[in-house]
Length: 278
Image (cartoon, rainbow, N blue to C red; front, side, top):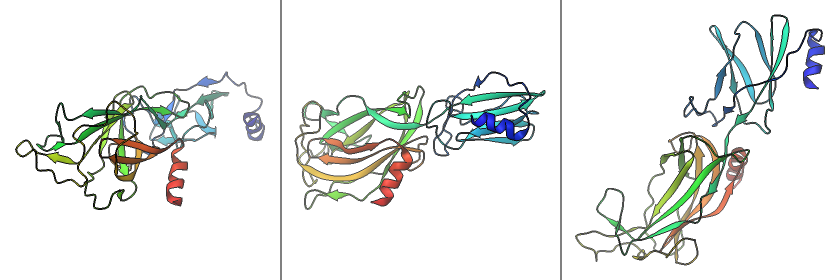
């Protein structure tokens, strides 16, 4: 309907119109461009001498030098909701495309808690031993529920100060970081406070002391709450705070394990507005 109105307005309604052509999907990462080869954010169009324009949808036509390309300016709300029109050789063509975007995180099973009693868990490359290690695994999905097919950078960001659930708790919080999600899959690795060192295993200084035997199996129930803070997840960059916002949750540390609680996912812009309103 919109195309017919545009044709009548432009005086080109008498020209023959070719069948609609489907163009490759583009990706939107809130301005980030992680890997154009597998997640393109722009598409160079054929026939640079033709006249191209966007009829509707979150995209724009850009001309640079002797090339013409279409760039996305936001995500699609439905499949093929970007409509382009091209005029050349006294013919009109319609082209359709979709702008995909990371939308939410889907859990890959319950959290996995590692028992540090049978095998000590070290804090990275340091010699300090921690009370436990929890792995919370996710897969990144787009707005249509499809998984991201290739490696993509993802980052975490702290969106609040630490809230102590026990008076006198002195567990430390490390800086936020980023990781490359293998085929859109990754795990948040959370550890308890340092329990001791190989030289002096009895020198425990954490308040409260983390359990040397983590919560058996998976899940989030049980244990004593220690501290929590708001955690945000973004896709499209390794730098904390950049990329498409896909999840906001509370990172809750217990004496025996850690969990993601009060999880909110979906439209990144809606999540940002919600956080600013708090």
